Length: 244
Ligand SMILES: Nc1ncnc2c1ncn2[C@@H]1O[C@H](COP(=O)(O)OP(=O)(O)O)[C@@H](O)[C@H]1O
Ligand SMILES: [Mg+2]
Image 1 (cartoon, rainbow, N blue to C red):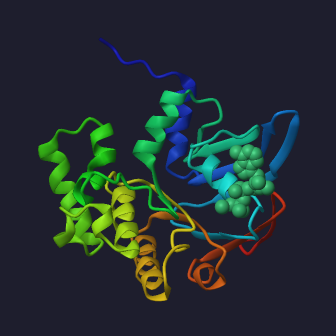
Image 2: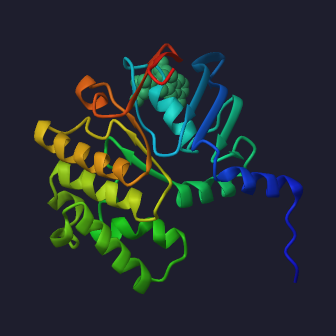
């Protein structure tokens, strides 16, 4: 059997090394509920380079989560071009998007989104399970990642047996276990008190120092100030970007 690579694929592969982590051009999202259309994101251009640590801030309803869900391939733009590491994402199939989410993106949510009946260790194993890794390979990787977030001794606890800050650290371990290039976080400290917030921010700073690309949504200025670049949204648009 021979493996053929189309010219288009070859160009994409060649582009990957020096391409930005994320490239968004004219991205718009229109929600249709009944007969009413609402444009939540109204034309966003954004380039995030590899290793960037970007905070996205803006009032509630300004379109931050809508933008993040498109970046994370959880939702599709209505219009615009989206490239990840030089590769065009806009026209991928659902299966291809699932593969991209599994391989290249680590997503952290405000509400942790852990499986309630599974242990911390099993939660961290989930992305590796979907990747088809057998248990004997999943467990050591998941354990190492729980150690990394300071929860090595809590692997057999269920989410209900963990504090909010600990649950978020499990969620971060789950986001990282598959070694993603891009880490996305939507209000990851939104439900945490000051000292738990500090622990989570230190984790993100460590990830940044090891060269990962991070995009973090927050409405707290103190959280945003820890990023290397700040992007402000209002009414579906970027109104300030300190990289420009
Ligand atoms: N699924 C949806 N259907 C219709 N409107 C939505 C949907 N999701 C979000 N919106 C609207 O889009 C706007 C932006 O929402 P969102 O992206 O969640 O903002 P933020 O995260 O900045 O608070 C809001 O006005 C919200 O009501
Ligand atoms: Mg939001």
